[in-house]
Length: 425
Image (cartoon, rainbow, N blue to C red; front, side, top):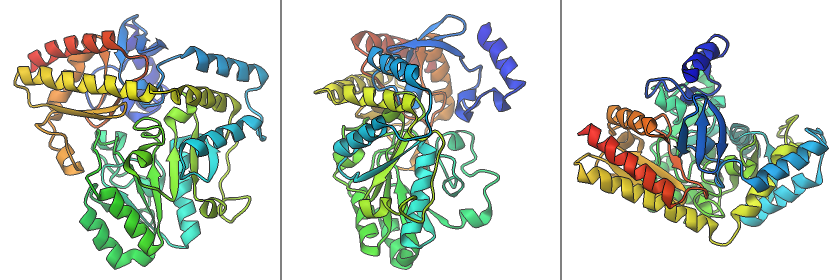
């Protein structure tokens, strides 16, 4: 089997055989699939097997894989140059489009990844306020910068190590971790230490401890406390941007942050991130201000071309609404199939993101996420994989649906789930 031999070969030269931990299948067991091509809603692995994809490269592929318009834009850009390390008109076009679609963005800085965007946002919040403390929430993952790998989600949660070795205690000491959706805890912390808090960073919809929706009033309280005490509110929309609404989760929930981080969809599948927000804060960035940030490949022309082409299609009338309806049909169908077989299972979606949980109701906090039956998820994952359905190889990751998923893909997925749930009883 090529997947097996490729994984064995990779482990000789790459730590764990993968270049991002959750890809290793260690959370679910077995051999990771090595993919050779993708189109629309489908992936093909090294053994020639086809899968309906619900990972979507962990979020970017909102249009589906290898969309012709995006591929054409990338090819045209690559024919002109692979990189300039100098300004291009297209960078400005992308920044203008982001400001147009996300009204809280008054200025934008393009970077190369979501991690780079959140890392810069933290530095900028501290530089703007001249304070040290950063507040985050347990189970939320904001990339692998030192200050943010404290009780993190995503791969860190999957492997049972919410914090990372190599992060100095003195660095972690400047990060305060609260419970997601606990508004009272937010108020209490600000009442005690409000003058010390540089900023709060939060996933407006958590997607890195599986999908957890914000409780009513939670985001509003965070916004109020940041405003009252002069702290910077950072909404990490790397995952939710152009997934839960055209203007992001902030548009859906009516929350205006001071800074926003973006990634995934805005790069159309290529490495691209962005940081944006209030003009007075953003102009603290070099070369205008004292907060330094730089990147050789920031605003890379190929990634920018993919992003522009993707956003041009994302804004088409009712496209996101159509994908959201497909996503809702998926999760409702899965819940119905589980219910017929008496399996403790729940599911939910928002926009084109969804969560699957082996518990009676969707979780509202990190503690409730931990109550999910991980062993049952692992069995379900492999049963679905054997039937050609590719889900995230972790019980703690949100799933994604694209514009390329239609009735045929949903029907095939539910047919596979019928057998998978049956095997769990």
